Length: 394
Image (cartoon, rainbow, N blue to C red; front, side, top):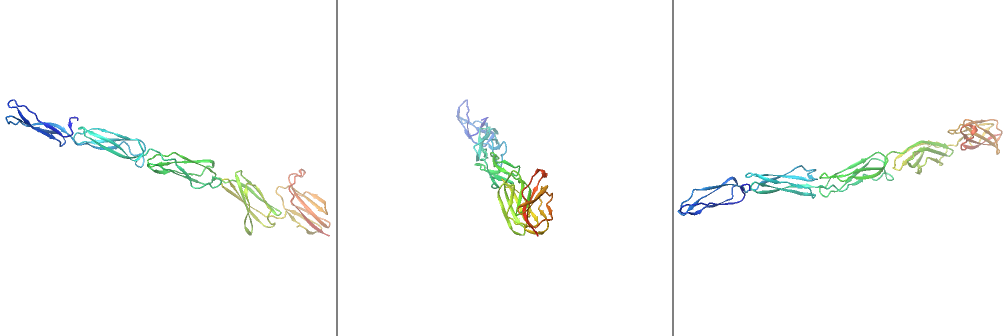
């Protein structure tokens, strides 16, 4: 090929003799060494025994295959793995006849951890040699990732503080290199979503996997808690935001006993504690919770006592007395009635929480007080503050 011989060559000499004729000629076989200027000599003998001068045949001989080296056109995509088609060039070397041609190779699947690309080179003498390039190939993304939250919902299917969602997956060929871990702490959203995926060792990303949940980290509002002491009870009232779902009320009696839960249930904005003793002091803690378990609390104290302060019930007085009662918030005046032997003997409207009475004749008196609001002519009265009795001695 190309003027080269690449395997053993038999050379036979021929000759002519004008007188006695040719008796014989020599023959020889050449099988090396490789050379670009090899030669084989030969002679002839005529029938008279005369030997001709040697005659040489020159030629090119190369019986050795070239050496072949693979060279990929680019490096691996990730961690020694290829994840899309790769071309491999093959380079040859030949010390005698030189390289004629080399054939490239390419690989685009199937996925394998022990794939190979083969190629060959041929020298100018027609000798060929092959080589292979080993590679790891994975063009398939990992399976869909699985999302796992770091805990169950905090309350009623809601999360109320930072949530971390980790992802896991599988890959049949190169294996998983890493998976996302996604955290969420805002904004509040009943349709919150995070998304994550896994990456295999060949650099293929898996499809994003969503994780939907409900999130609310904002506590509800509870304001304007007031404790209104009454005779034998304490009335609590407050303002609560619309997202309050449940309420608890805990009472503590100053100087005695453990805290007592008075109420634990659905949303309310008022409560009357009727199991108290006049003259004692009570502290109330009201806690409000939303559906997500967020909590807000407030505290108030109340001292229940008889609203009619003096004279005490059935007290004995001489000639006259001063009536006193607990003031009522928002009252602009009061209506006081005085009764004797079942007959009303006085109706009056003092502006403050007291009324002095003098020159009373002996007997048992009953008195009642109502709060008035606005102008007296409007006759707007609140609930009865209280009723009591006293005795005027003769």
